[in-house]
Amino acid sequence: MLLSFDTATSLVTAALHDGQDVVDERLSERPMKHGEHLAPLIEALLTDNGLVRQDLTAIAVGVGPGPFTGLRVGLVTARTLAHVLEIPVYGVCTLDVVAIEAIDTGAVTGDFLVATDARRKEVYLAAYDDRGRRTEGPVVARPADVASDLPVAGEGALLYPEHFARGVAPTRPSAGWLARVVAEERAELLDPEPLYLRRPDAVVSGPRKPVLPPA
Image (cartoon, rainbow, N blue to C red; front, side, top):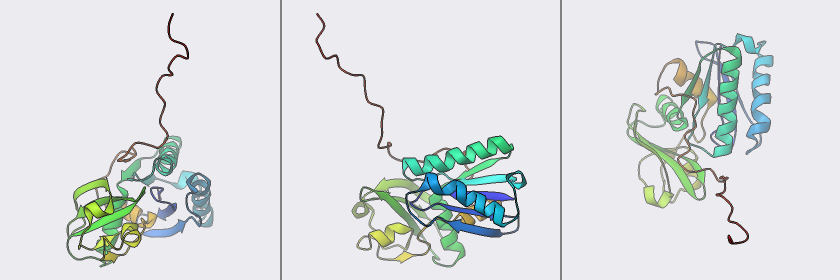
C-alpha cells in the first residue's frame, strides 16, 4: 500500500494507493495547519481502511516548490515514516503532479503552464508540453512578469486572472494524483528534499557586534 501526501500548499492532502488505483483521499479542512493536520489525516486514512502503518510498502511526498514550514512538515514526516518502517520514499515536484492531472483529465490538450501561490504576490511557475512533461522551471516570479495566454492550471490563475486569463483545473495538488504519478512513474522521482526556490523567512542572524569597542 502506497501512502502519499503533499504539504506544499495551504491545505494538506493525503491518499492511499493499492497498486491498482487510489482507494481513499483526504484534504485538510483549514489552511496553514500542516503540523496539526498531517498526522491525523494519515491515521484516519489507515484506520478507516482497516490498515496499520506496517501495511505500507512505500511513501510518496510532494517536494514543492512551496513555503518553508509546510514543506518541512511533509518531508520530515515522510523521511521519518520511511526510516521507521524501512520502506522507500519518493519525492515528486508538486507542479508536475498538477500537470499530469490536467493532462489526464482533459483540461489541457497542448502546451500549458502550472502556477501555484508563492505568497508575497508571487507564483511558482513551470511550463509543460502536451504530454505533461516539464519544459521550463520551476521558478518563482511576479505574475506580471510571467503573464501568459496559455492555459494555466493551479491556484495562480484564480489569484491573478488579469495575468493568467485561461485558468483550468486542477487548482490544487492532489495526493491521489501524486500516488498515481509515482505508481506509474509518470514524472521524475526525486529524493525527499525540499524545493524552496527562495530563502526561508526565518534565518540565522549574523554574529553580534560588541557593545563596546575594543580597548
